Length: 260
Length: 260
Image 1 (cartoon, each protein chain N blue to C red):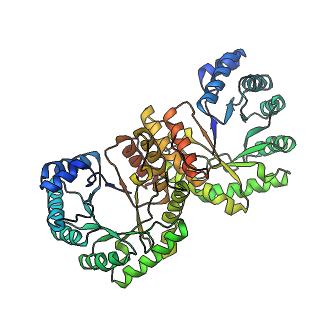
Image 2: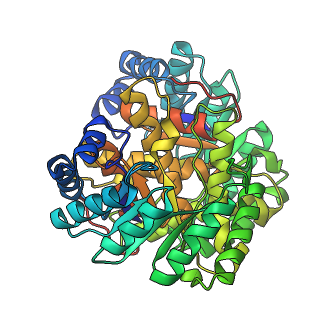
Image 3: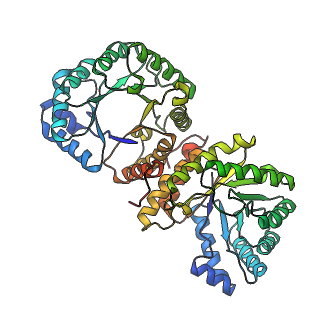
């Protein structure tokens, strides 16, 4: 299970301000903190970047890759920002991501095909809504698998995101049981050992305090790991939750176990 | 998921001494602490009780049921102690337990059949050893299911224990992945919604410190919960691990989720 830091996100005021001013210091600092904490990769969540998307994503990618040698995940809904980030990357990146929404298919698939890079595919309905159950997610996976193959994308490049639901949503707990089922079932359903990613922070949206956030993330993370999740997008700066993630890797992995 | 306290065990010197002297205070104190922590049931792990088994198990059962109104699990390898505990119980109890070992089948099955009480069945080989993989555990389950039906025991009374392996064992991590598979698969394999129990403390036998013990228990517990474990035998006096257990119940349960 690859641990991807979700900490570099434009919704943090200090990051938003750094992007606005093209000030590399706070970006570099966050990238280094994530690497030092033990992240295997860093998600650059730039948001839509409605103004100067290419310049800003280029700045983000160049700043992060100058600071750390980790793989990058380009997390934006703006195709222009995505293309610029891809062009600025010196190493292979993961595009985050595509879905069955028509504009995503039209703009993101060609970028991924041309770059031959990994691509996160969200198991959303074509209208962009989260399916209410496992069946809806499976249906989206089958359709996306077909779209990607039709676009000439190697299925080995696909990383499906079954959309972790906030527990506070109506039937959020039942939805997250469906997420586990989807992660376990997808390789059989598609007849291909497709990869998966899960965004842990979504789970605790609206949590009243950090203790509860930590407890519920710690409780759901091992369920994701045991279901076979390939990549986990998470806050790597909470040592308790990161410790659980690392323990899960040692429990679920094939290496000889050692206490650490 | 029912939480059973494993804290009342003869391997603790204070409990061993209390049993030796028939002194109820330390037993009562431990039972109350478990109940106050949130245990749903208490395992009375008396060990083999090679001397005066009937008198001592009777003392244990009477002391605990005078202190708390929780269901009791009678955890002994001594059939005489088991029979005495059963006779002293005012409420239904769980017998812990039977296995394919010939003397267990001969002595424990008739007790369980006569009392019509729940019975924990260990998925061990007939020689008492832990099977090395999922297949060996499944084989034991099928054989035990047959033995119990032949003895006239209602299959709804059976609670299978797939034997959590210490992580420090050779291939302990792989064995525990097999444990999860067994818990998930047993109802389909047997064509019956059979119950399961897992002993969490076994996982961390030999852990070098409490932080590591807590971290690995916290990481494996949710995997057991998501696999569908009916009962969890655990140290209920570690608030962090118990908090994870309660969070797992709210994530995996069907009740409307609330933050707590």
